[in-house]
Image 1 (tube, helix red, strand yellow):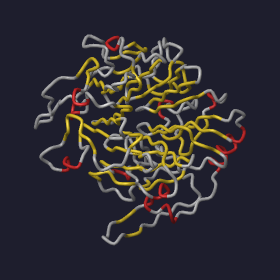
Image 2 (cartoon, one colour; image 1 turned 180 degrees about the vertical axis):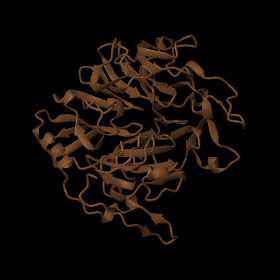
Image 3 (cartoon, helix red, strand yellow; image 1 turned 90 degrees about the vertical axis):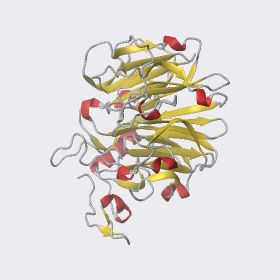
Length: 437
């Protein structure tokens, strides 16, 4: 264990519920570990003020550190030590990197072509350049098994798994596309941003109308087109193999989108949030109905400026810097101090009562946010994860020096004079672009 003192006793709440270590970190006294000191020393030695760090599960090299080792603390990615990195996005078991020059690199698992490289490698432990993309990429996105990039002119390129049409390349396209392919069905329709889920995609156009298109697997209504599951869980309609306009949002100018496992979200120019898919709003607490298959407006949140989707939870940042979360709260991913599911947006407190939240990202069952230039994480720490072995856990995606769950936002220590610029959560790893002052 990489913390000097581990508080292993349990405390009881008034209702008799036992709370483990994740609930007790306020009473945990930690000292600076060797791993923390190494990171801080690395940061202080960085000549360029901007750098990138990753942490969590290291299987298949998804951290881009040149090894398969997992990291319970943030680790400096030397491949971009020149400070050229603009953005990082974490997918299921892979990571994409975007440089200032508009080049895209990838690391991690490549079983479905999600790295976008020409050779047949099954994974990459160091960032490799994605093949065949134009040199003017301005935005990237990663799903669980697929990836995308957008050029300066709004052209959308996609690659990776295509089993449900999530690449938008048409019904006749192959089930795996290992190198970037331009989505020709969007010719003449420039894209502002795209969000990728497990096997669906959603995008918003650059036009003044801010129109939204979605495609891929339509289970649980996550495409917003009215797809519904039968009582046996079978779709009454097929997947969408090319981008399709969400009719219910016509006339609503959308400025950003987000995609989770079985749900999606949109944010309009007036700060309103629309959600659709599995268990996305209060009435879904009823067993009689489990999905909303067309966009539904959330009325309980102030003017919003950012939205993010995890596997089964959603986060929204308001114009005042408040963070609201709702959905499944397994492992404490909502940051509300417990693990009870929340069916209406609830404001996250803790450190965010003192400082505004500026960025948020959702993983499978963990969440990360930037507040006052600092990174905070909470939720699933990785213990007893998908690759668990005795005496070892390949988790650590919270970057807090252990693999346990935290139910409240907890500071990730990068040392002094470090400011976080961007944050991204994958399935069980996390990355950040930071600046050393």
